[in-house]
Image (cartoon, one colour):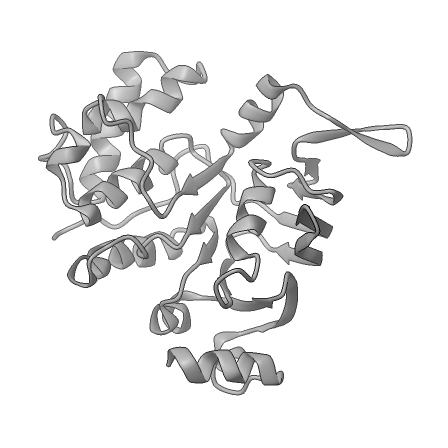
Length: 265
């Protein structure tokens, strides 16, 4: 696989992401328990933790696919999914929330491509749907982005005709098409066969040098050590510790972090 060097999409401004005292529960099960997190512009933050620790839920709260019971998220100072009304937070309209989500790229573990659309149209769909670009310009952008992720020869293919690694690279191109200030990756390699993991990680590594703010949930510890500016370890819905990879991965302070790493390294 060959890819061009990925650059931050034109018009994108690396975003600051702030998570303020976020709590989320399902029934009596508390999934997030007072999470506070600030991600600086252009920072690559990798989130680690055992299954069920709240990692994916945190990402979904960031773009308001999940609504927190307590707390809020802001990007570049703008509240996501809500607005202040007096001392309360009121839910925005679905249309307003969709507009906000257009500034947050989201790459899912299971690709979530439209099976009835070609690769080109999958990538071009969002800029057209949001009114940012006409169809011709959106397709020009889609061709450029697909070339960047090494799929310039697959524009007319359908998702079912691609390998899992190729589908995930299409999903990354689709996330870039909206020129987001932040991109979140929810275990982007977990649904892939082992031999396909490297091609997706290579694209993300390239993107990590582009200046875009990235939040990545992954179990790939070596990958985290290589690209992360900061590693955040979550367990039981709480941030247990965070810091540079050289500290969290090589000299973890908390016993729960050490226990987790002893099982995955």
